[in-house]
Length: 522
Image (cartoon, rainbow, N blue to C red; front, side):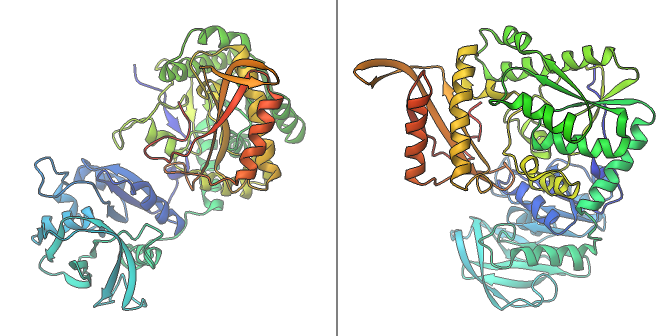
């Protein structure tokens, strides 16, 4: 049985679209975000996309991303060369630059000279991409092979000491290639290069703005729902809150918000959700206290994927039961984001983990889905939330996983472990706020592994849990770095947690980045 229909997202509207063909680059998502920063909608598509599929999407431009392999490797990623005959402007970046050259008759060679890191670029022709830029600039390189001869009809526009064709242009066909990575912040004028491609190459309309995203989403939702009713899975986090606000703007009282309290929320969160949405925003809110049901379903389950699927299915079954008492409740609103879709595994990307609201949904769900944020990165969601007038403490609330503390307890879920982690996590958040770092940090939280270690408190021996402190900085959750918290702050958190939370006798700090790790532990 196929899954539910998904609708109501912003890209259903009339926006110019740029496709980012993903050749396995670690920066493909970053390219997409840079395009959106220029107020142009971008979509990541798989490297195996056909020319017919590209044409069906009617893009105004195509960007070929970098990739980890050689264009001459036996298993090298390739492109349907008919895409290059569609008359759509193309920008190749790094591996995409090499694919473009090779496909059009140029030469890509293994010169034995690699460039990794900053490089000095000399601009020799500033017709399009480099117009108005200095002749000498710093760019970020990451390659072994290099284009040694540009295809016929192309002009070499820039070089580095180790890359004779560091950039090339065919302005007649509106095709461009750069060996460096303009999407990376280390490239001095990278955003300018991308925007020159968008403006001069693609001649885009820069209409992907907060106001237009809301306008298009509201129109799509109102048209889809008609006189029916939508139920919103509300958690109080920024994603579901912004989704609820957009849908409420579209259909008003036809929206019923359902807050399923699974007992795995942060300390005091249930009361906060009630106060905010029932009393402040005057939305229809049903508070379902389902703690016992979730704990029973999770009993003895330690595998993280199984946890997510159990929680996802239990959520849906609760919604279905609530909907039985609501006439015409045919739609379910979710705060699914673009990174959720990518990480849950599509033909565009390998699966990293299932998100309970994407990969964890059962096939026999009784609703069609309304996902107004499905095309948005987190920073875009926050901007849209501000445009909608949501309060700062909701818009800038740090992300919290849908499965809640179930994926921050490593091992079986018990009421005791949840209670311990709630108390410890509250201290972490309080101290991060007190230090004035809450908005600077993407996420800061505690993780409780289901192991115990020996400690000494007072004159006695203890055998208790450790708390793993996790704090990261990020722009969009696709990549993240561990936050360099001051030692004094780490010491204060550690002292308070050990002294105030029975059951914890040591605190450790996670200093791994994403990749290779993920932000959450499960």
